[in-house]
Image (tube, rainbow, N blue to C red):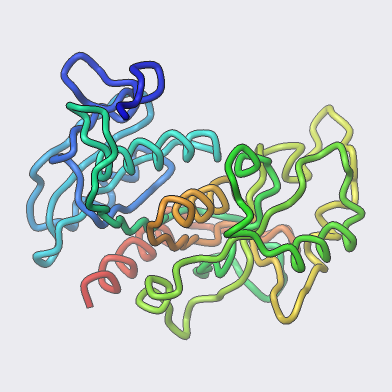
Amino acid sequence: MSLGASELVLNQDGSVYHLNLRPENIATTIILVGDQDRVDKVTKHFDNIEFTTQKREFRTTTGTYKNKRISVISTGIGSDNIDIVLNELDALANIDLSTRKIKENFTQLSFIRIGTSGSLQADIPVNSFVLSSHGLDLNGLLHFYQIESISHPAIENAFVKHTNWSEKKAHPIIVSNSTSLANKLASPIVFQGVTATAGGFYGPQGRVLRLALEDANLNNKIDSFSFEGNRITNLEMETSAIYGLSQLLGHHAVSLNAVIANRANGTFSENPSKIVADLIEYTLKKLTA
């Protein structure tokens, strides 16, 4: 059965609607960054560039680094953008765009997020790296999909009880990373833990400007949560969506974050661009080791 034009939306040149990409434009190893300007900060290390394009906040460059073909794509901010990016990238790999039919042979992709984040734990300092063992979805995106096969009810229910989570909010979902990819990217210098993924930057992350919060103590409850050795190390806006959609679609995913702020002690990196540059070099070396 062919997918309808309203379901798989294509541009006039046959590229996927938002990313402006055709299947030949992407590699099977894909680095995801939030900031479109960070794409060039990654690809400046490449040995050659074969393709680049941009539509809206979605900038893509594909090239090779030490003989490994890699694509780097900016997702913009938030889980809603991740929903666009991962679904369209999977479509490029696993749907025949000319017939709009799902391909018989599945192509598996590997997604590596290089992002920035705020630490929630006093012992995870600014200018360190965090590899997300799990993504904790606090924004509700994954509830629009059939998530029973990827969720961890015991941890989720313990988190709901610990935080006295409001029933008016989407039920939290916790999703693990790709173990094989995580093993490749891990090292003793990298912290590991659960990354909470919020649905916004201000209220959803406990920031107060002129609006009062539904639960002013939620961040403290998140910080103090632990389940069988799993604690919440950091807070950002993309990881759980990447992990959840990757698992549901059959792909690998790992999220690496440069810690530029520590919410526990109120510190901020004096040179955030350097720690991001260091994380980029670390990731590229690990991917090609």
